[in-house]
Image (cartoon, rainbow, N blue to C red; front, side, top):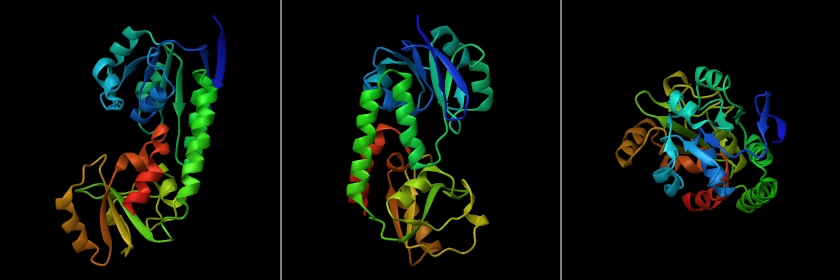
Length: 256
């Protein structure tokens, strides 16, 4: 069987049997991408958070959560490729798994790195043509969307009590910038709201994930930001890199 070596987004060389026939996916958005690529037979294991597509969630073996993998179950599946992510999966779990199987890792902090990941996973799974077509379509949809944020300032909350917001060097920050918003949080990664200077953004976005903000949270943040427009937003559209990026611009247009 043919062996090929690829370099992942962490700069690691990964040698796989090509094309891989037994794939375990450790990240929901990347699982959705593998489905878009038509790899129904090849994907044999997913996490309990890989809820799309529903047919896979109901039928594929679930191997724990993204940060609490059931390592013995993965060993028993004998995958010839595992696809994970630096932020979503733990260093210890990945270090253990790569002793036994090829593990390809994504590392995505920008829109451009997400596009790159799609291209790389297409190469890795012998789906180069559909990956290139997907990337072309994503770029076109975002281009049609234009500068919908119109330079308005925003803070994007991902957690409540304590309140955490999205900062720079994150995929969500890159998406906000891509569609024309200015992120009022200029700290790195995911700082606590209490650690920030007094902010007065045009918008406050309350995400549906990882914390499920609801209508009752709007009043709380309206009191904190009396002049801001508070909006509940679909976290998947802002944070899922992969094929979900094709649908996101249409959501952004309706949201604004």
